[in-house]
Image 1 (cartoon, one colour):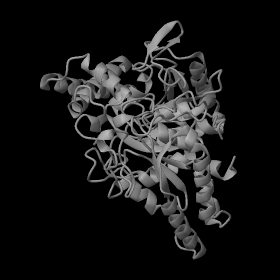
Image 2 (tube, rainbow, N blue to C red):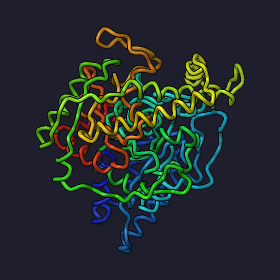
Image 3 (cartoon, rainbow, N blue to C red):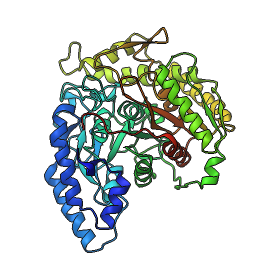
Length: 471
């Protein structure tokens, strides 16, 4: 194990500023970790070692010359391969974009580089991001660093595996139905799904537009909440290419302000059961926050099932309508996972103008009712998913005597995509097999700082970040 690669990113940055750690040494340690582990994990689809080494050399010169340094100066990061990084592949896991290389950086990548971060490479995704596991016909499947026979999740599974295994200090994923939070939960790291528009989706493929702009976001992933906070602060801010953007200033609350946030928690949604260890993790988190001085009550918001159904209409039904014309019958470019998703979508009637408009109006009315409930409980604590990381290819599970199907297991993240809430995941417990279990902390739109502050309090009390077995 290389201890350097498992330091928190904020510690790496501090030691670089104090000249106790060399950016060159740090990048070399990460490249060595990638060379050692990526053949088994298949997290990175492209690594540009020479470019990273040049950037590390330049970062070291800046330190020696005592230039002004950014918050992430010299920190090696990774980016999901659905986001533009100049000179790197931006294929989103599909043969339809095979060999496509970005000619410019997405705005958030520019912001990360301006803060001193060094991009090591780009990471694997399922085809067109439409799965909660990571496999495609271009690069094959990504394996969990906790168990190679299991998935690190999707669609930001390559990103989660890279960060968990110490191949990257942190990075960027995207999330339209749990694609940051489920991989964070499966892989034992932290992740943040922000409010749409808080971090620009400009430069992401598929493009975040129409109804997908309401539910799809990009956000940071890291091993600690402190690292999430720094990545968020660097990446956030409006961009003209993001139609949901708003000029919301960063507002970190004081400790006293954070402790005044009432927390409502629920162990399940009364529809999809969760494993006993998942229940235990939520209870542990609730007790930890109560012990830290928060008012914590059992509270299940009304409207969760309606949110799940409406999310399905946007993501599955509308998503299938958009993606299906891209492929012909029997198309060899279509991966099995995406083929299955399109079959699920085709099993339901497609939208007409009236049905899409009706779903859109229902969503807005539900948001108003839901946010009214959050006036009393501005923080919600709940499971991230019904199960921990599953074995490759599994499609259903027995939980509490009930069959939980693939599309139902992630409803706990889908609620907050439909409603537009920011939500973070923090590792808290583990399954009998030793797999990580994360809990989800959701807040009100545009209040990422409150969510991350509560997440930091939880992590301090009972955070369960561990180095996975492969490392």
